[in-house]
Amino acid sequence: MTGATETSNQKMEANVVVLGTESVGKSALTVRLLTRRFIGEYGDIESIYSHSFLSEGKEITLNIWDSPYSEDLSRETSLFHKKVQWADGFVLVYSICDRASFNAASRLIQNIRSTKSPHGAEKPPIVLVGNKRDLHHRRTVLTEEGQLLALSTDCLFYEVSAAEGYHGVLSVFHGLMDRIKDVKLTSKRPLRFKGIVKSMSAVFARRRTDSL
Ligand SMILES: Nc1nc2c(ncn2[C@@H]2O[C@H](COP(=O)(O)OP(=O)(O)OP(=O)(O)O)[C@@H](O)[C@H]2O)c(=O)[nH]1
Image (cartoon, rainbow, N blue to C red; front, top):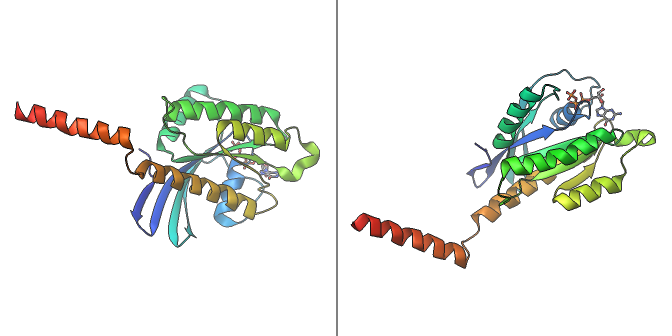
């Protein structure tokens, strides 16, 4: 079950999963958002955090699922499915100093899309994040590569440093929230002609079976 619910006109809640390979900074980004701090070392704790903020007069609550990366494939696969079904949006993190983490992010985008929307009907919102921008002297993934991957897969893209700043990290989560809101609005749009015909056919079909 996904949780993007509008509890009233003034409130909205959404589930966000933070994904990426080992040590890319998933916990650092999450903790930075929640506490505005960078504490350097983070334990291997599986947690769902709640974070609220105001946007355009609305109270937005994000439930953020952060978990350590595991090499245990069977655990990862079943947990991955759970997370993908639960989530309304994804923060997909790689380190700009770790090409393998970038390649893994690219594969994860495909996996999320095929798991969440097997027929490709809707695209779950994803933000691709290149973290550790402060370590530019160790960079192995160019900014342009991140931009290109995001563009070709319809993701948002940010390069940030969880170590250096709060505002970049905030933009990541706010950007994702805006995408989730857009998806919700699109799914609420009035039916187009095809949709109206479909709905009317469904009603008439039901009437016919009722009268039998
Ligand atoms: N220089 C620098 N180091 C960072 C940054 N973000 C995280 N780190 C460091 O990278 C290491 C891993 O960070 P974590 O947040 O634990 O990474 P993770 O992705 O949650 O790792 P797992 O839980 O093992 O999957 C820690 O030593 C952090 O201090 C950053 O923006 N810049």
